[in-house]
Length: 268
Image (tube, rainbow, N blue to C red; front, side, top):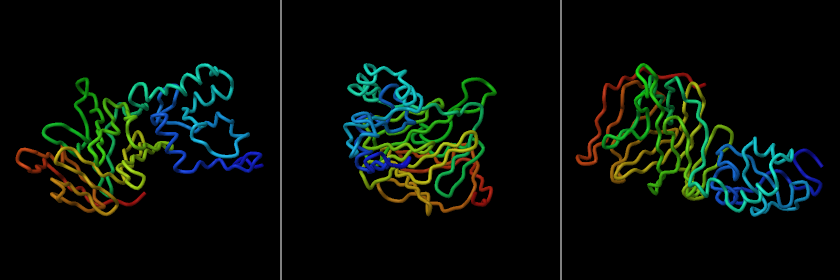
């Protein structure tokens, strides 16, 4: 037996389909508190006695609650109750604390970097991806991001610097500070990594909101209207400006405000 296998030779690696079933059943958060940074806990049977990975015997627990359970500080009764009624399912969302106060990070979207508090996407006057005005005069702006999948369902949001994840999503996988959202097993709708205090990194996104869409990968940044390309950019490039793309549904137009191309950058 090694640290990566139990006495039956079962690996700690949980097959992707089983892990997804566990996440869906738990609402993508800790069953006790809804925390969206989680670990997988084998409870029936415990991992050391398991011969297979069964989704029904695995739950999501945040690191503090996982430690409480292992040390006996989380009662069996409370844990059983949480298994029957996971917090995120009961409340509709999982959550995470985002250390986003007192700074305006860069957004890295594909190969495009937006800095200086630049908002990226505004549709009909609503900032969907950028910054909201500060709560107090002289304070930094608040990060705002509302990500809709290709089915136009709201799946992941940062609002007033708090992360929420829709427990009705098809799949939201958290690994450390990175989340991957899918609307089907092969459809990655969003990859997002949070690196406070410097940046929010979005390597891939396939986003639909009304008539508009945003498709980004490591090749191209593309705004879409009614399924057809409306604007495209390639990188690497760094951009500044108050709000880059303002989309008007009534006219079908995209307006930019004071966009400044600062130049390229070195890969880190």
